[in-house]
Length: 234
Image (tube, rainbow, N blue to C red):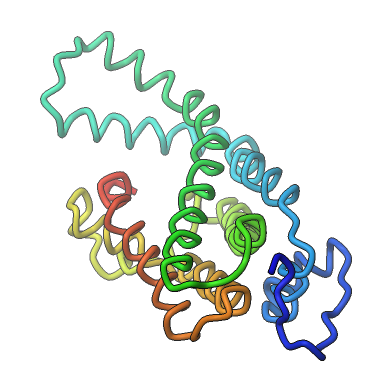
């Protein structure tokens, strides 16, 4: 069934765009029910394509320095055959390449996460179509937008590009290691993001909440382990 019967007699609350966006934060269950009945993906596409880039552009000097430092550190930890001139050119271009690649990376990550959750749920004979799952995971990105907005405000006072709300606050001495990358992935806002996804998946899949939540948790753990190398210098 394309439009799942959340509870046959239950009336799904009508919501406009702003109510859905705000609802992800303050009333995720009602919002997910609305998205399951009428899945939407236009907002997530624009949010992922431009949200993070906007932060980077507004704080470009801080962003540029941050990217350059990370690239310089990464190059210093590898036995690269590049000359010093090539290294300097790579570091100089890195912020602009990051701006270009960020929307692509965000949209690709959204697709992969959704495919993984959707595929695993189908293994458990769960219900729902792919657009419904895209809508659930896409609107959950509102949590990331909130994080970016808070980071933007704090950055004017801290001089840092983003807020660090991960376990690495307790282990700065491990920076540069794989373990540090794993800890960097265990972040308050990322956990919140996956909790919201789990709520939606639990509703749309019509399987036991234990199985639905376990699937989402498994995808989150896999993401942490896969991305740890890229997060170890953040």
